[in-house]
Length: 472
Image (cartoon, rainbow, N blue to C red; front, top):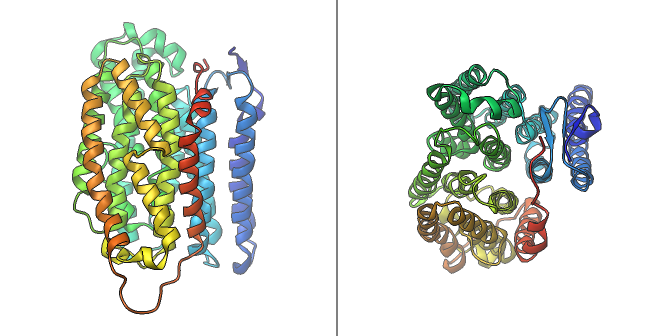
């Protein structure tokens, strides 16, 4: 059942996050430095309330709101839970680093605003809302990348901003072309009009739009910012940049694939399949000999985009596409955040060699790292294993068997660089000296590793929740 409903409560998770960000900005301006943690608590409460609201909305019928511009369906509600859950983890990861800083409240507000833009991207069914979501997700993230104001952070923010500004303009140009071709911005109207529009105009608009979304997702050929921005940013910010924006970007691409571009002659599926193969391959090649752990995870996230693009490539052609994408997004989010939680828990361990013998000193933390890294490979029974299995099946069903083969080869190849990190941590001998303390994010690493295993084991009933068509 679909319909138009102007009730703002349909956007309750987004309203809670926006209200918390605005209130946090106002309250933070008056709170003394040692009490700005209150803004962080407010942000966490907004995320938790948004997750609860999304759960309630998921039990209701799918619908559209505000003239059909905003969809409330399985994709939106899943994205809400994953984005808000990931944001909640990032807020906790960063709380230790920003505690009592002069700009502590601003950090919480920036994270919330960027997450809010990502939520809008995931639910947008109008190109104007799509563009607004992109900008809101991007601008606060530029500030977060350089929040520490040190040399690496400034370089990270500059590279992130320059690439984002360029591809953002390209994307806005694509929106203009699609508006000219489809004589509207709503997805329903575009699906009707674009098949009859001039093919070169539609192709140029679609390619430009894809370039902007691949920037948010961190996929080839818009991936150049990822390694430097992730390495130069604080670990909590790096966790955010490699996880949360991906969810909104890939959900938005899925909506475009099954909506406005579904009936056009533009070879969308083939183009996305080629970019999927390129992302997973180049990401793996870049990660093979990295020594810095954040840079290794940066290239890992590029390769993961390749696997996540597989269901997008077959959207509308394979019944499993939606379930595969949504489950993979959920599994990837908790697994990737778990790996970064380990990095946050050991802030002085920048390189792989710094983890040598860590299993002797911190066995539970290293066990969590192993679960998360092998989970990113796709080792059973982790959630990413089920996600990859579903994505491979969707690729076969959608007529892209070659893509599934390329993905399988890349999956095996990725085991090499993850083991390069695991091996010294488990088999190496710890250096003599005092045992370095682990920080509070270690609890989040334990939780994320456990959740990855639990979601993989409970995959059957969870996958059943991800079915159903889109609103509109």
